[in-house]
Length: 282
Image (cartoon, rainbow, N blue to C red; front, side, top):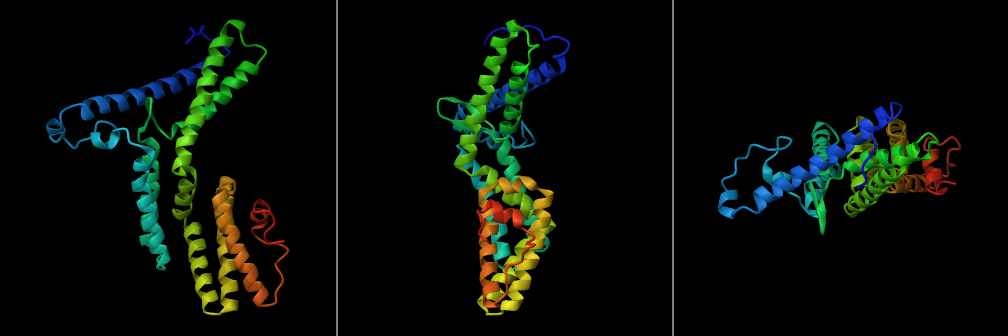
């Protein structure tokens, strides 16, 4: 990597952040490799005597070893499945809330778990946003007319590195659908999210039993709860699977309205979801 000329006073705060980000990435990578070398490469008999007290983040050394991303995601997926099963049986109270909190905790744990990859040092899923920010800030500096010419090559190298890291980490997140399952956990940990799920559960059962008016009321209660969820977390509308799930519910609602010979409401509370879903309710 080219030598970086000391930043000007104007760029001092920016460079401080860049240096801190780079130092954090190097530190995380170094810890991951240290744990791999110390724990994996030592004899099995010695590993069995390791203390359970953690080296990093209060976890045991074994928990901090680099893992394939699918294997690393299994605790999160198991926790999500457990929370979902509770809701399938009509549990939306404290027990479900605790189950979703556990799932969210497993999601956070996965984000800081060193992920092994062929031919390269381990990576961590949480670094995606940090590298996106770094790439954007470097691009802004490169676009500035005041950037010293002798710093351009070094800045371009750093920007290319950050951009490559973004693409790499995103590929690993996509393998386990990390962004979607994190969104699912965020929804489940909110009271409004569980309220939406509970109303959906009631709507399904009322529809199956032929109680059409009751199904309509339950659907509309669910949509009001979803409105609260989406207003609090607008980024959820960028998750295609979340939008698709809600759109399916809207489609079921349309069938209920058809059974009642009732029109679809013009001032529908989830009109933005309808738009994102390609006009399913039109």
